[in-house]
Length: 527
Image (tube, rainbow, N blue to C red):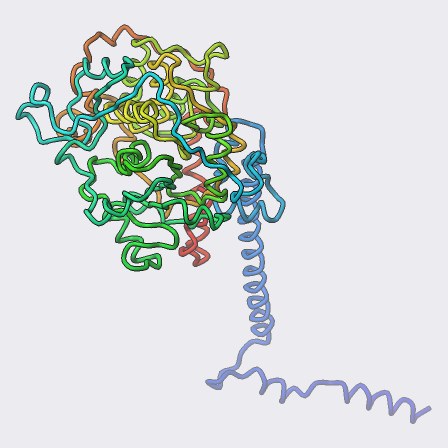
């Protein structure tokens, strides 16, 4: 019994801490004693800091996830106000589509011929209807210009000349750009090269907004038959040489670079209309041409496109129907609210068309729509087709560079004599892959809200070489003209408040990328 008690006391004694050792352990480096409570406080602070980092990281990832989910929602929602925010051309959208989280733009299969090698090319040109001979003004008319200003690319077309140009005759002479000393000159070497081009795939890049994209699915026959011509200005040529592999100073893959010196306009978008609409003037030997915007990658054999859209239906001009709009006035309203050009200038443009009798589109009209998707144009260069291109370009030269606003008006003024194939938009989406611009386009004139802003110190906002119809007096009073009401039912026609949401999302994306140290990936943002 005594032995058990002795062992119990000894055991308790052995469990007691060594106070001298404990006191030694809590001494600081400087020899001063620290309270025993300091140690657990440090542990708590360390654990708290780690937890704070973890919580912050989780919240940050949740914020990024929320932004992506919002992007997915805006791309999938049926609410017009929100769905317009989604940019279905962005790399983010393509990534989400690859993951199966969003659906792509509406596409449908094109009823193409099975084999380009078996396509039969017509031996003769389409017969000339209404216009048999077409020539162009190449020098300024002293009566309309005199010594008032230097030559202009589009010429000083009078209102009387414009009116007369819509009256079809067997032999006609019209303004069609390329006035002597007006700009847009090609080098002799390029002029000699394009003389051999009977079949042309043309594209253009201005002010360095794009880089060339190589066509795919081009058959060996088409590679031999077609000239692939990329029209550029000097800024774009320098940008391409810096960022893309250029062969022999003039070739990028299959594309032959064609330099236009002395751009004819102040606005790059208006400069881009020269090769787009006046393809027959740049390449006068061409029998057929396919225009595709510089941001697009052609994925259909060009010979199959000619067979499908021209030869099969015996057409000389083909263009796609606009995805949203059939009514020019609705398209103009959308352009104003999306700030695609100065609102008062669009209004003046539309008032002139309204005064000259253009009615809103209805199913009773002979055309499928008054508004095209102008990024792809397929043409046979007949006299009537060339005349249409000239008249279309003259409207772009006189008014706004938004060519979709002028297309249907020219068709209307030709009174049904110009037949075209306006094919479904879903086929249009199946012809190309769309790539983002290298940078955003912005122009001061796009934000102008009143004609008064062009006066006084702001007169520099005026385009000095284009839009002449807006600065020379129109021979009628437009004050009493009322534009037709617009329903605003399409996804492309929502109110301007969408811009605030768009900019807000843009700022949020930029902040996220900057904080994550991914500023170099800004081009992948979905806008």
